[in-house]
Image 1 (tube, one colour):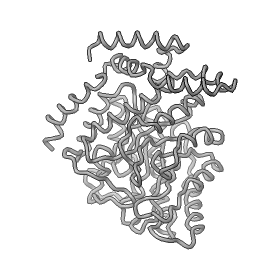
Image 2 (image 1 turned 180 degrees about the vertical axis):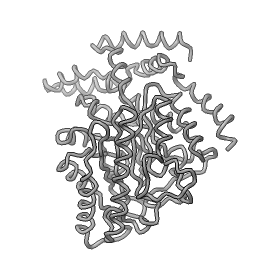
Image 3 (image 1 turned 120 degrees about the vertical axis):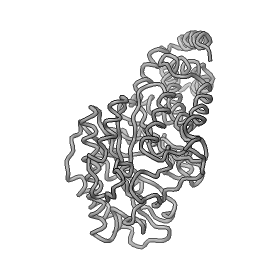
Image 4 (image 1 turned 30 degrees about the vertical axis):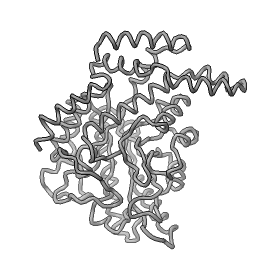
Length: 420
């Protein structure tokens, strides 16, 4: 797309939005503050780098076998760099604990240390990225029966308690060295495929484990904890210990962030409707932006109605500084770098549209009971020239605009990933 075309379209868009009282450049500046956390596990199908561990368990399943997945830390970092080069703005990288730089050594989860992630910190510092982190409580012999922090065996619970405490310490050090709060997220696969009699026991075990984990007090200026629920998973269709109600109660009672994953609820539920409620009772929340399709929670994010509703809810609530946004999907059926770029750009577009919404006028209509006018303006807003503004934003950051990035990814595939 030519610069002249981009500039002409942008000038028209500015004029069109100005007629509605909207400052386009202010909206772009606000959107530029949105730092999205790219999940490292999209590029290698959640394999990680633990010695001898390449089997996914605990409700984690990646479908597809598109060639060219990252096989080493260097390949993974190169793919992330490539994706970042096609995304405007400054963003983060989200690591799981099984992605440590273990050098081929067998290091069990309750023995990981900051030294196993120092090369990630050094790489991020060199590239100008910030890091987020996750404990990895799946794909391990001590999670094989479907339970970790809620396990009936105290010794197994203690193993996972130690793992999560170590992960929180690693996250704290990441925040210290990189000068940006590291968000540490806790998701566990605990649940059962069939009926469970003593649900209360498992949930009491989980509560007690979390209490022990949080006995170690971290510096809130360096890292923040978040806890993530799920309705059901593969292999835990009948019972999930960490339900939404469990984590919402625990998070509010213990002043912890709550993670809302767009694919972790009933197919007829949407997280956009939950955001304004949670923000009344929790200081901040973490979003895992995903796309649920039937029973699979992790399709590549696209600019659909729910993504737009999520962004609108946050912007209308003036809560952009209280919401952390990360992606969480893993699709091995298409080019993995392309999946990154599609997902992040879609998320940015949703937030840009929300920032360009004529919210002041819409609120006025609503306050005056002018429901026809409110609905009409909402409909007309959908066809405003927001895409021209996004193209301009890309160009202003030196990033390929519009669909032209497709050929760039094709070239990278030809030169790099196809040769793996």
